Amino acid sequence: MRNSLFGFFIFILILNVSPSWAASKTILLAGGCFWCIEHDMRSVQGVLETRVGYAGGDRPSPTYKNYNDTDSQYKVSHIEVIKVTYDTHLISQRELLNEFLRKIDPTDGAGQFCDRGPSYRPAIFVDNQNEKKIALAVLTEAEQKLQTKVNVDILPQAKFWEAEEYHQNFAEKNSLSYKYYRYSCGRDKKINQIWGEVSDAQK
Image (cartoon, rainbow, N blue to C red; front, side, top):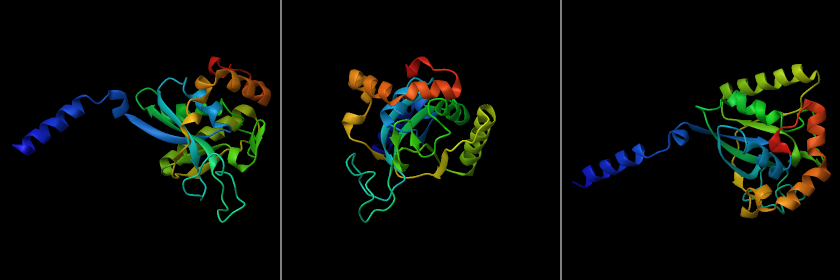
C-alpha cells in the first residue's frame, strides 16, 4: 500500500511539472559585471531564470570580498558569472549564445568596459564536446560579422558558487545605483559601437 501511494505521488508530481522546466538546460556565462549581464539576459525570450555568482577559480565558498583575491594560497581567481536556465523548446544554445555575445564586448579578453582584470573576462562554460563545438561556431560567426578577432574564453564546466542575495537581480532592486554605474561604465555606448545596435533591455 505504501509503495502504491508513493508511486501515485510521484506520478502526480510529474504531471504538474511545467513543460518549460521539463525542457530546461543551464549554462554559465561571463560577461563582465554580473549585475549587467544578468539584467540583459533576463529579457531574452526562453530564459527561465538567472542567478549571479562565481566560477572558474580554486577558492572554495568564495564571497564578493575575496572571489578575485589571488594574494593567498588560492592562485586562480573566480570569474563573475551568471547561471542561465533556459527553455530548449523556445531557444537553442546557439541562439542563446548569439544573444549573449550581443550584450558584451566579445573583442576584449582583458575585462569588460570599465571593469578590468581576469575576473571580468568574457567566457562560456561548456559541459561537453558538442556544446564546445556550438560555442566555437558562434564565436567564428561573430568574428566574421565584426571582421576582428573575438576574445571569449571557452572553459570546461565548473562549480557555480552563488553570490550573496543582495547581488541577485540587482538592477531591479537598486535601479538608480545600477543605471548610474552602467552609464558611467560606458557599457551601452561601447556595445553600440561594436554591434551598431542597442536593445531595449540594454537601455
